[in-house]
Every structure is written in C-alpha cells, then in structure tokens.
Length: 97
Image (cartoon, rainbow, N blue to C red; front, side, top):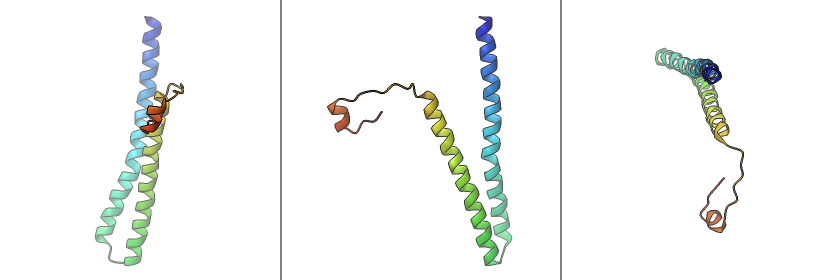
C-alpha cells in the first residue's frame, strides 16, 4: 500500500510538471497572436500589417504542431503494442489497427 502511494505521488508530480509545461507552451503563441492582433488594429502601414500577419501565422502553425504532438503522444501512450489481425470483413469495412 505504501509503495502504491509513493508511486501515485510520483505520477501526480510528473503530471503537475507536464500540465505546467503544456499550459505555458499553449499560452505563449496565443498571447503573441493576441498582441499582434492588437497591433494590427492600430497599424495603417500595409507592409507592417503583412509582417504582423506572417509572424502570427508562424506562431499559430507552431501551436497547431504542438497540439498535434500532444495528441500523437496521447495516442501512443495508450497503444498497447499489440498488432491485431483483421479478417476479411474488417479490411473490407476500412477498419484500421
């Protein structure tokens, strides 16, 4: 029982670190995009608007990749490593492993 409690404490600490890191990595591009949107609302120079838009797009693409990486990690963490053979019906219906 004590060993399980220690293991759960360790897992909770790792989860806390993960959540902190992920929340920071998610908020940074959002904060940047919001700041750029504010600047764009005040800007009249078209070349500056294009530059702000380019930076915003770059940050949002980075955020999109980060979210995709989190989803991939989540899927891989739940994958049990077993390969399941599909019968004819499964293959015909487009079932995937």
